[in-house]
Image 1 (spheres, rainbow, N blue to C red):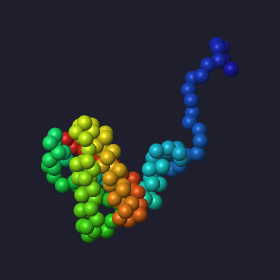
Image 2 (image 1 turned 90 degrees about the vertical axis):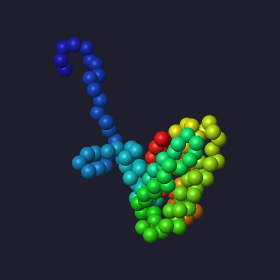
Image 3 (image 1 turned 120 degrees about the vertical axis):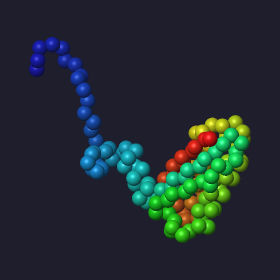
Length: 130
């Protein structure tokens, strides 16, 4: 086509794409997969503030989408209790590992929601250490 050797100069992604706002996203990608989970199972975000001595600095803050009514205080309290139980059950070494703490809390929240509403929501944990 042109003088010189043949070589690869770039690549073009291929496969099915979904329209996501003003962009295209791979149908099998994380964006579309997480959106589908949130649509069918709901979503929960829990923020927790911990110190080195396992003393709560504040109550865990729980935000949900498509899981609880706004006035469902008993369910929210149950979730908070499960979070503290997960933290209390951790060995000291695990408690110092932020990723392990986040995962233990995430699993506790999902388990509690499965028992409360029959769904395992997309769950994110915001961990703050002070």
